[in-house]
Image 1 (cartoon, rainbow, N blue to C red):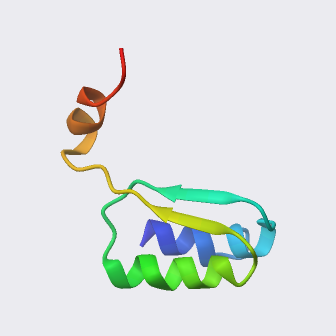
Image 2 (image 1 turned 120 degrees about the horizontal axis):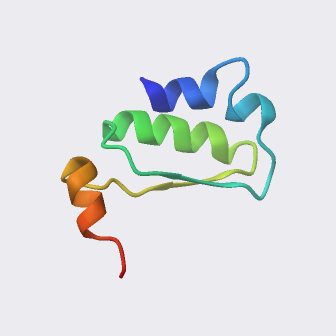
Image 3 (image 1 turned 45 degrees about the vertical axis):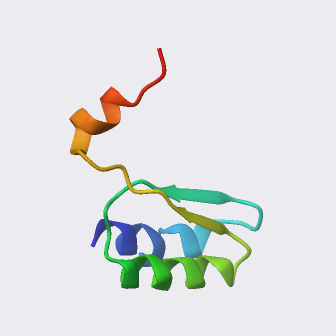
Amino acid sequence: EHVEQLCFADNGLLAHGHAGLTIIDTTTSEAEVSRKVANALQSKGIEFIDAPVSGGPAGAASRRPG
């Protein structure tokens, strides 16, 4: 829900993003949502990278360098 809102809201990425922008989604969204968002952003020249982090905040923290 949040990923779609970020993309499709009136003040979202489709309305205000620009070609050459890269969006990295670290949520665990459904694959269908990721494809929908990626296709929409690609039509505007925005790159979308789906890079989910498993394990929630603790999992992400444990993967930090240093």
